[in-house]
Image 1: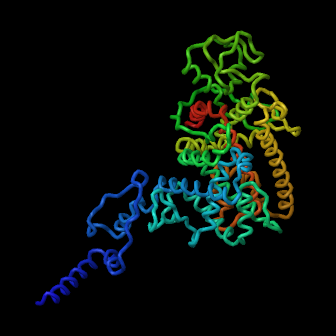
Image 2 (image 1 turned 90 degrees about the horizontal axis):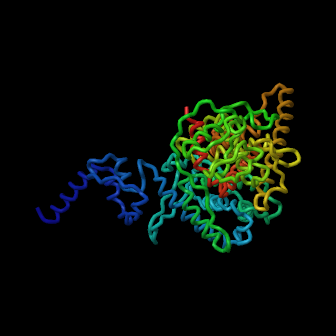
Image 3 (image 1 turned 90 degrees about the vertical axis):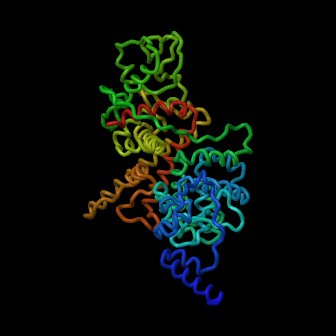
Length: 524
């Protein structure tokens, strides 16, 4: 047999053997050579051990060829790294387009932690070229000629699937906009007025949806450190300002549930309609006793036990307060609020007084506290803000807080006045929604129809379940309706106010202690 014929026979035999062993490899060999494999940072992406091709199943062969995929899904770390790169480039582009001038960033303050991620979602939607929508992920070590990886429903990890679905619902609406209205949408996201006339009324709804996803992204601990880096780079021109810091959270082991807690509801206004529920007030007192040396105090006062609220540990002087029964030793002990308490501490204690009530009313928050304390903390704060705004804000715009004390706007320092104004505005808007829903329910019942889900019920559903909340039992693939849009915008206001408040130093300094107490309340 000639050498040429021998080579042809050998090639045919090998070709037949390869087609039997691995159809995938056989098909690959019949096409043009593949480009070099994508180089990935192995500190970010996990890698499966290599096995001989003939011992793998077809699915295994596919997964091994893509080491950045874990069990068919992209790793969370890989997506976080890609989002960080998108955020940096988005902020740079927004500055070039005049969306994020220094003056705009200055007025945004804490809102910028939501605006930045929302812009990332907008630009990703405008550039998506697949159906269903997907996101091309930039790689940290990407170089010219390398292929990008698309984040899609098929490879999205479970932790991000709700974000992916909510973002994808908005992609068709964004891409149907003309270039002028797309530019206006980016301006609305940044809090700027649209330029095109007539104004597209749908832009506010789309912006609210993107911001709702961005808020939940900002609430994830795994994103916070990288987001802080990007935001501080954008805020670099703000001289004399402290670095922007999102709240950092640590998982606190669940504390044992302590018996004989006194209801904190009894310390609130008598006009409150909230049910009497167990309070973490005495739990806090017990934890303080464990962590500190014994400090003599009056045991005859019921107020010191039933009216115990969080406040900074201080060393008071020998003079007695009207809210304290006996002087303290030099050992630092928690103090009760006094008429001279700073406004930020008053607001904090009023909100913290409502936290345990929210865990009792919304049991899912207690369960979430064990697996995702960051999300649970934000959720509880948002519910507490809604509770205070609807039960403690007077029609004059004052806040009746713990121990019957009242906070007025003129007593707030200038930097806190916008936060108090927003709290009061939220309370007023909630009453408007309640009145509208009551009137509509009466009309529907009068016509023999069932009452619809109220706006505030929708808001509570979003606060409890997040941005991917079910919509009246339907799949929810299309755009939100008017009622749902109102609920999303209102929930965004609550979540953003929670983000701003918990970023303040006075909230952060007592955060871990609150986790200990709330863990005790939520434990069975």
